[in-house]
Image (cartoon, rainbow, N blue to C red; front, side, top):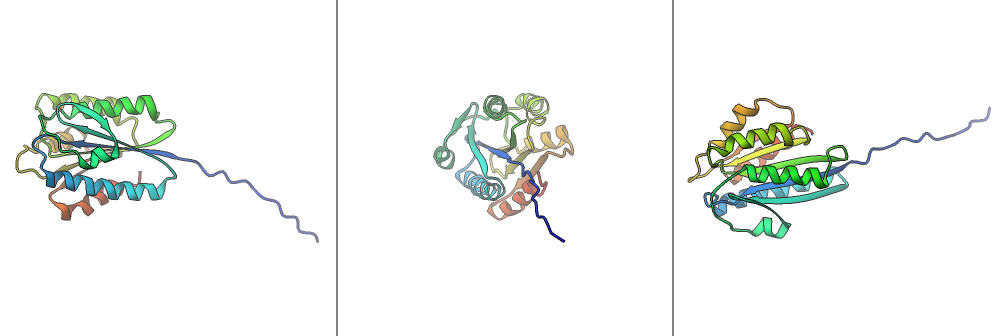
Length: 191
């Protein structure tokens, strides 16, 4: 008997991923809180890079207005001002629409803030999340760092307004020791 060997082609999917980091740099965010965000972002970025080959990273900072910045600026900026979180969500949505269509990209949007936001802006945030961002992203993460200055109300708005959604992860980050637990919450969804 002759044995004939042939091969079967197994296609492996090529997945592109983009991580969009958003950070509150308003006056109520202290340097210590910004350091917590930066450390968390570094480790999340490191893990996701180990999972995907074609990964892109974008950075957004915001106070009352949002701006896309480079990595260096994200990790070193010391801004101040009021807080309008919706400005970051709208800019994130614009980036997705113009550069990273959800049909071609795995999209991870991570937002870090102390939870202080102009009250009337919370409604705009919820609308932008529900109607624009959440239908497009694999995972939306919100990390709220504890603040001696901010109201911390925004996390409650998210918990109440979004409820339990499969592509939403919310974590409270009290201090540097809580970074690891927040990363487990964010990446534990397996998205």
